[in-house]
Length: 492
Ligand code: CA
Ligand code: CA
Image (tube, rainbow, N blue to C red; front, side, top):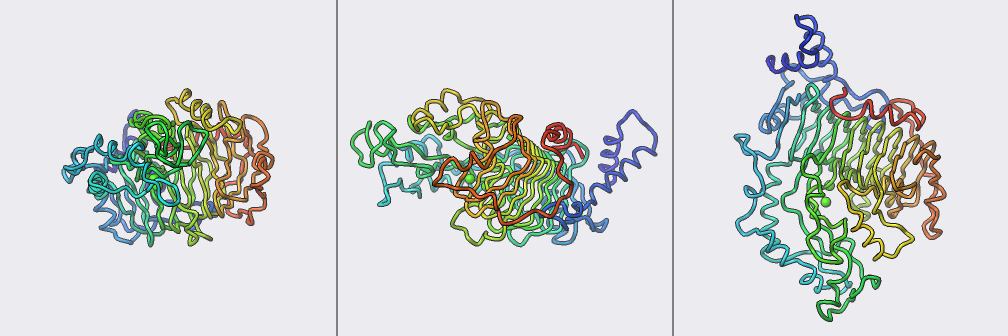
């Protein structure tokens, strides 16, 4: 540990200043950062101290997957600090050689054969008695995809243990191509100063029923199969779905994520366009290989995200995975402050059930191509295709879902070719509060825009008022400079 530690200390101090005093001071400063607990009252995760009380024997420096796994398991649930040095690729074998699709693929799996077997022209013809495509794909290609996906999952999903701080050394720590999983029973976790990149799913699944609708505005869309030009295969919908988040808080509690960067890196979704013909070539129907950046689900609770930088990614943060999961009621309480959502598509976050406090966050992106309520679905479809571009379309920041209670304060939205309609979107919820936010330089009048549809009224009474402020909110107009200066890995 001493060697790597010294190296990091010199990096922090800079090489211009030689001599022993400076590196030792930098080392002490670094050690103090590694031992920090969350600030007092800093949002829902207040009280989280991770591994800050670790014995010296439970402080590890790791630089590959095996060392990370060993450190997580060696300390068990004892307080431990795990320092990440350099880049850790999680999609590797035990000798740290990268594993890719060909290594995980089952011999029977073939993407071309998969596409043929489940193409809408074949599979959407099988409608259930609820007049929707059968969503549970069956047959040898789906079975082979499952086996392939299981092979990948065993390598790249890493279970985090309780009472742990994982912190990047210096300004270039990275975790690539994998998923940190904070599951049910895991508590008290801190993750700081790390760039998470490209949690890539090599075996995404086609879900023919996702967002599918019998929609007469689409030419040829009919519940009865008539011929190749008319029938359910011509109805819109179906989505590719992918499995891995960079960080999944899936049942875990008391988690502080601070000063991390999340990005798809060199494999953005734009490289994987839709593969089925009209109407299954909407911009949403890319062969998606990424899921969330940070998803918080299945009874997870007491989470604070501060100064993280979410970049160029579609589904950023899902809080609550299903309307029907009523056991999430009273949980999923999350604070977002000082984060930057840059060129994100949606879910910043999308919330079910949780009491979510969002303040002083910065949202930037481009909404051109996003659906326009004044256009028909077909017109929106054509518009989306014609305007599809390199970064995700900024569709909606807050997703106001079932049972959610979002309390937003002094956020700053900079949405090119968009407006307040892209800042918040009703997705089954009935409550939303904002004060002091700005959208493209103007006071955010959420009350009016969210109540445009009298059938879906939104109340500003969310039933709670945040009390845990790690930092008092600054005015929204000061948020861009403040967040640009502070958010992301390498800025601790
Ligand atoms: Ca998914
Ligand atoms: Ca997810």
